[in-house]
Image 1 (cartoon, helix red, strand yellow):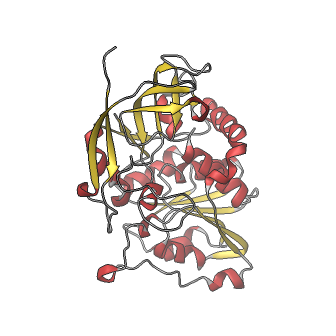
Image 2 (cartoon, rainbow, N blue to C red):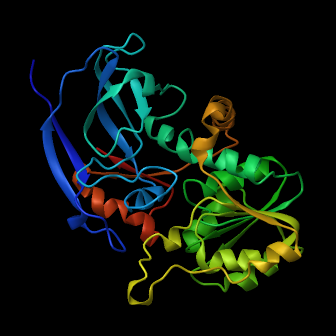
Length: 338
């Protein structure tokens, strides 16, 4: 049996600000044989998500940081090479948190078999993966969305935001999205069905929010933090909910050279409007993923839920491709094709 070379990106040092190629070590090792209960997988696609930046930092968080010299944590999807687990066979398509590498040996009990007759494999890293579950539980459970409410979504053309807005529309909400550039703003209105778009690159966000949400915001779904969060806080309605999913504008702030993280100034709006601001982690809803995935798959099949993947080819481009998330250059769910 011929040997298989497994190429891996390992964390070489903890980034200061925007990750650099020097923060990574590209290594190669021989893929070992599977033991009882394990499966060998050739990884086809790797999910690139904003949360990965937080996983690179030392310190307490909701998940253990990636260690120095460890393979970078990431969701991935691929094809079974061979299996010593009864539920998997060569050729099966699977998804799991397999890391930034070209191959993996993984416990079968931690793998999810996926059906590519329902959706293409990259979709299981997006709308039918962690971003889809994040959108579903974030807007419906944490946001406690009600029919007829006004919803504001930041990073509205991204992997999570685009789904949040569509789910909210399905539930009868008036939805306004914030995105960067004419192309992304046109996409969320013309293709995804948002009621309005705010271009943060060319408009004063505070004024635009007041214009598009004249009676205030019932639910703000925040993916970016910073000044945009402040603009939303200033325009809350009585009993509003602010869902803190992420803060991508702040992830590379180090406190050096005057670039400390932005502190919200309008938080007293929570008191005045008897509103709440709540953070959440999608892993808290793991036991309910099957129902959410069933709903999402049904909406995709019926054409009620659209999704977009930004697929970049080339495993070696990982460091630069990851940074598209922080420059806003990606358009849709960012996926690396191995």
